[in-house]
Length: 71
Image 1 (cartoon, rainbow, N blue to C red):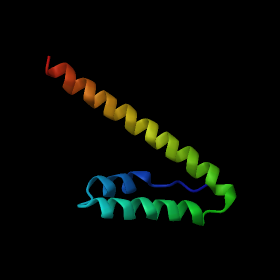
Image 2: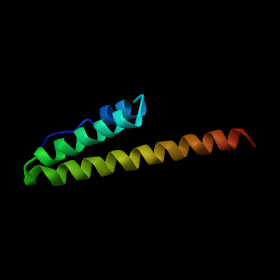
Image 3: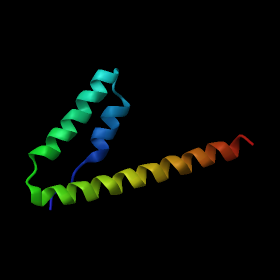
Image 4: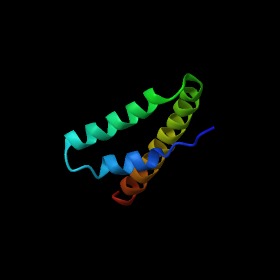
């Protein structure tokens, strides 16, 4: 099973200078997915969901820390 580096796409997207650049990065990720054999698409989706859940959890934790420090 291949391991996908979603963090690199995420970091590039965060640092994109324009919305068009961000859209191009998202398109690159979609093209990667579309190029995969069907047998790999499930692993890709599972890894993406895990990455997104981890990032949302991290952002929530960061937000709560900042919010708590401001009260």
